[in-house]
Image (tube, rainbow, N blue to C red; front, side, top):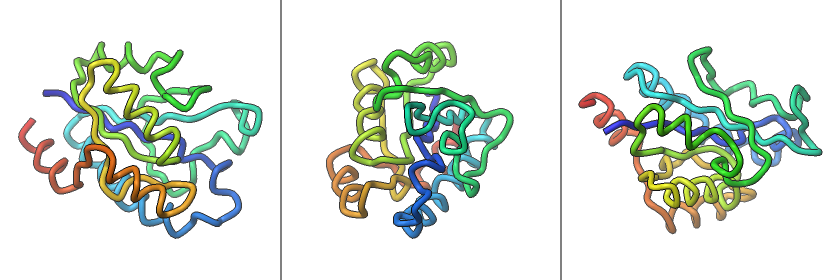
Length: 164
């Protein structure tokens, strides 16, 4: 089995007001540690960034938040729709690497994270949300999304990656 981590929309535009700072900080602990497990196991980490009127390419708003650990080996995908698979090269990238399972994390739980999760499922990938690794418009949104979909813990990921 091959597995990839999808880090979705952790961009400065969405966190510039500081309202979700506690939730972002908590989620980043899980996301950064999980991404290190993926890199150590030589499994892909895909940074997905939304571009649009509010955050065009090469703008400050398009940039990922400073606290997100990013490596040169990470893949980058730009998207214009909530579903990161829609009209992007994500499906081809994952199929080229024989990925079977994607772990989704990032922002916004009830929009881009959920839509990308569903997009993975629609394209025949197994999908799971990183437990405690998603941020919603508010805290309740993230909790609700995690109750509606498959969730995987950081401990389970660490164990799986050690066996691959």
